[in-house]
Amino acid sequence: MNHLRKLGLASFLFLGLGLFCGTSEARLGWTPSTALTVTLICYAVGLVLALIAFMQSRRGQSLDGTTKFLARAPLALVTIGVLIVFLRAMTGW
Image (cartoon, rainbow, N blue to C red; front, side):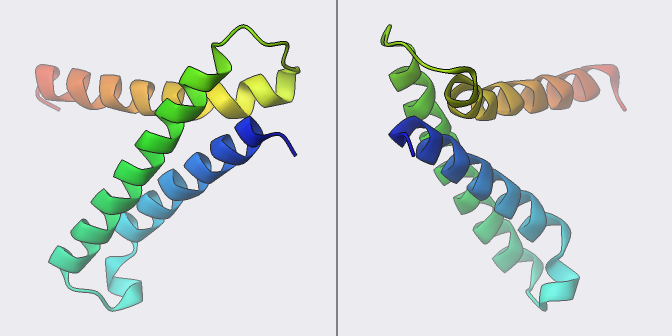
């Protein structure tokens, strides 16, 4: 497996784990501060991995479609999520 695929999958894993930990604090038996800490750490690791994969995918090497998707999609999802949160904050939702 290509290293960009591994980075992309790891980024998806940490972003998904952050989403899971943030939404299931009661099921896991964590206090809200513990759930917030774990969620933010997972999001930070996922974002760093997404940035690394995205920057390495832009080097001009010949990549297949799956590798390009796995390397670039996590950063796109983070960007779309930030845009949605920003627009919701601006409209007062």
